[in-house]
Image (cartoon, rainbow, N blue to C red; front, side, top):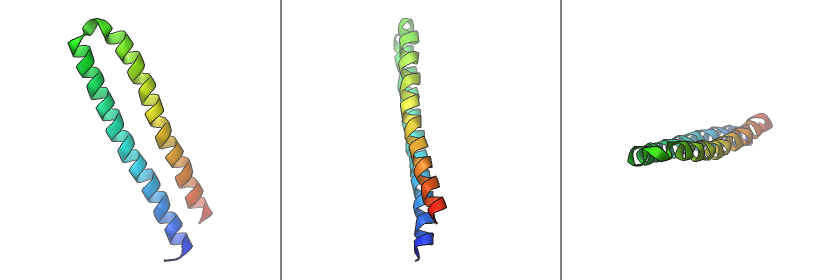
Length: 76
């Protein structure tokens, strides 16, 4: 394979695996957050605030992967 094909392959793998990991991470986080709220409804505000902040950090990883994928795609 030439370097252009490898750059496109790396670009697809970077964003694909990052999206998959982000989806799993967010799903796990939201599931645990809902579990925590169901156990302690009075702490719903604090749990929701922490969950949204955690989701923002997880989403940042996907954005970093998107930037890397774009760098690889336009390098080719």
